[in-house]
Length: 322
Image (cartoon, rainbow, N blue to C red; front, side, top):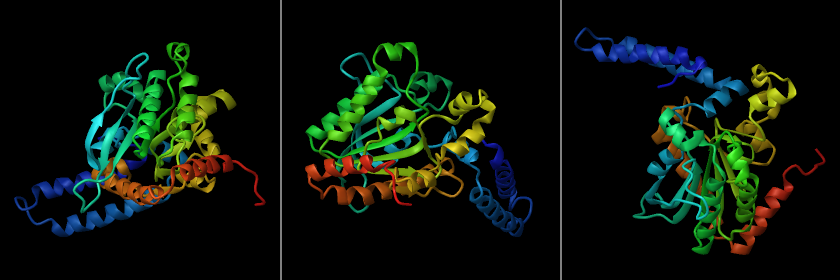
């Protein structure tokens, strides 16, 4: 498991506990010492995650062990069928999507929804295939096709956002990157079904917003959402990527900031220590939030859903008396 610098004291303590547990019984009774260390680990974890800096939260949202879209799909949706291709150029593995049934406890089968999300890789080989979660135009055209398909069959749309941004390569620009993103925005604004967007990791620029025009926008506790990466901002303002931590603080990109600005509607609390430490727990928490937000939206009329979405985004950034 990858370990961030500020996590090291906690991880070292947990390894000590595991080491004692592995020899307990054969080499003596260490139960009291294990209890003492476990209590210390819980207190240390609370202290670390209570006072995270903005830059540490950026590091957390990018953690390589953090659950990605397909990790959540596996745990939250039944009978998921992935759909491929944009019917124009090709398939883009940086965006995945398809129909699946949202799992609801006590029900044999939940409502069928369209799930669309960014997908990163776990290792170098996978990241080459997934382009490090940075979609090309064909990825956004695939997303738009799936949005239209969901609208045609009157199925809710759930998007999972986790990208540093759209791929900025020459080929992507030649194939109409900005136009593809714009068409995603337009399509999501017009669909007559409930749309819930969740930032599960890194929400970067227009590449994230393409999946973010929704009736409800949720953010995982340690996720971020910004118009530009901290490194990109630092390069522009200070001509120095080393100022990324300062840029992150100025960008106001944390979940609490985004909620305060009225862009996000709710924050989904993560397991203690972050989603990367407990994928199943993180998925259960997200599933509960999706169910709670989807149920009232499914009772709204199609026209009302479009109006509410329009009003929500028109109000962002509007001047107030405060």
